[in-house]
Image (cartoon, rainbow, N blue to C red; front, top):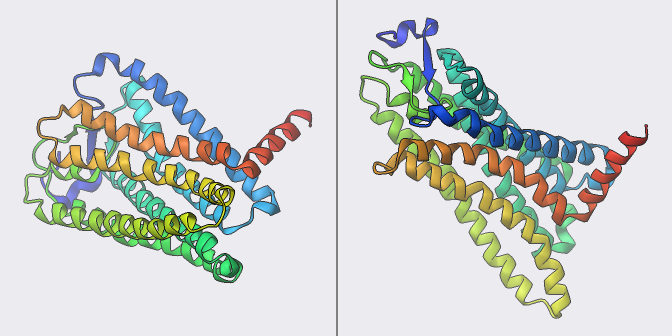
Length: 314
């Protein structure tokens, strides 16, 4: 491995996969592969349905499209390379490729969090300010929120590339992971990585802390508004529209929380367990998000079925 950041452009890392489970990685890869196929099929189907149906060109579904796109980017940045490691033992990854993978995995996670926050705002306006919904959540505003999500993810994660590239790697070049996660790479350096640790934590607190706080406040207001509705039927109807989004919130933050905690503080947790949790974080939310909305939202369910029926009879 190179002895400094100046000549890292010609070097590479080795992704070890799942330490201690090398003999069964092929079997572990099978459910991951099938879940990734389901992820691709489900996300692309819902995206095509929303694009095709004019009735779905509403803020809620446009935000859902943004979420599914960021989910696809995040899972596709890691899982194909992961499967190559499991199937063909292709563990090498060039330094530049590692930086690119790191950027897309972390930036798309921030984009997803931003979109989930925007979806909470959408539900707040729809339930608490229904008469102003069409004037507040206009298509230009939705587009601006989409641009903001991309800029937020890009600007917060782009410095990580420079923070990693400046590090000298004079020890091992073996990453005990299945993909280039920021701290997994930084820990290989023989220099002080305090700046990387502090910046990583600051970004996590800024994104997750702010987003979760805002989502919590919005849902406290939403729940209060739902309970103040006059009839039980109205409460049930309005409350049911939020169930899909609440499931998405839980899928977005709970796996990420477990993965982050075990990565940073799981000193007594086996590295294989930490890595499996990270893999689940990359595959479970992108796979289940379109399924949850497909099951809970009749408009999407109906139009997805229509899409496949049209393809079948062509």
